[in-house]
Length: 320
Image 1 (cartoon, rainbow, N blue to C red):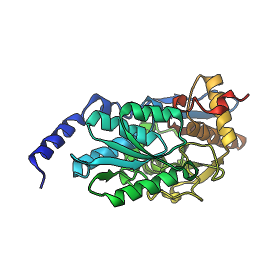
Image 2: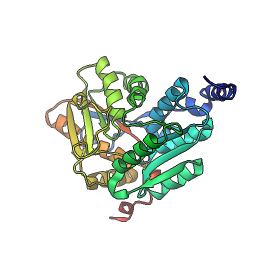
Image 3: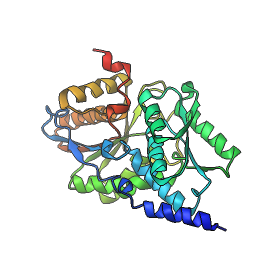
Image 4: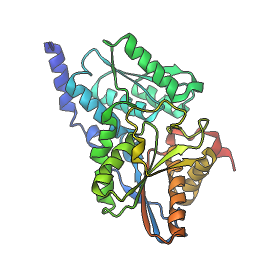
């Protein structure tokens, strides 16, 4: 039975669901990347500028959906700490929401994430359990699972890799936004695979609207890579929400190609985007070249998960 104090706490949380912060999540602009396909006039390349979300990334969408559901069903309530594993952006989104809605946040995260991520999480007041960098996000997942199993009464384990609210957020918001903003003209949708929520949810909605849209997933070309936020599914802990049957094809991108695209977009388009965003643009460019070579017109839409602000300390910026 819920106590009077818990009822009052939940009521405060519910009132704050309609806050300006939550209302600002989503409805990000769809921008043209004309420079990338300048030599291919029959191809249009469009991208969702997800850094326009209040937490600075596409992960705000999934985090907000998971938090809303947990508050509604009582799994996140007074005395509970939100717990999850993250490589950065989802953790930042949870930390932001925790600060705004007054619940504590504990994150398991590889200790080699960028200094910028560490500073942002500290600024929001989140606690972090640092994990072995050699184990990447999989090591963080194992540690979060262990903590949740050892003390289930203390934690509300969000488990973003298995939580259906992850992909539902994109089915409900990202997919419809892309359809509306593109006028329903897109021929291809391209997105990277991390938790896979963005790809799975968006593709499910877009395929309902037009089953002819080509869904293209993007992964690193090897398990040892520098593509922050992306998973090499063949060797990683595969998220429970991932559905490989949704992809019409998969494009593997090399770390070096993504780093080169980050700098190219900055210096030629004035866009500072993250590494996974650049990897998606690399895949889009390759698809655009294939379509043009076959004499086909195409409208390719992708998602730019975040900006470069969390990656400015990376050494590749100093390389020629």
